[in-house]
Length: 228
Image (cartoon, rainbow, N blue to C red; front, side, top):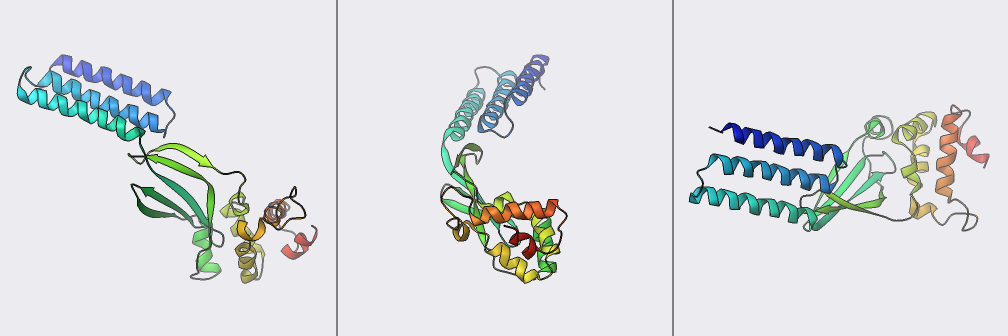
């Protein structure tokens, strides 16, 4: 049974935990490391108060908890991998590639456009992946510890999946709409501009699509685009 002093000490540690949660940005590697350190500290307090002082068991438990605390701090400060997001320019399915200690895994994230696409455009297709412009650095606990970004932003990333779905719905020839988005990759549009200071064709298309949607999709896409 734990003594009253043990419970009080556990509550004190819990108080510091609440303060840490409230004062450190959620999701940061620092907040995760502090929380883990405080949890380990709480167990250390309980272990010190509940096991007979001077016994070999108490010494072993205390040392294990101390080592565990340092291990958490060390793992939280070591860069061990990264994650990078992608989107399919056709259906807008999201993909995140995470690499940790040299091992890579991919997770997929659906949205309203990616769910609508196979039922209304084509049941299956080869994804055309466009990568994001920012890579998240991960520590050994798979928590974010930094972000590295390259200048600019790819055109398709400026277009929300819901807007893309609306465009599909307002272009009668769905295959023509598919071709429009299939050509909206940075590789195909980046160098297509009047001069180096102008927007790329991809960015102009995305801006025109947004204006077409804001206007309520009047006429056809071809007529709207010809205004440029």
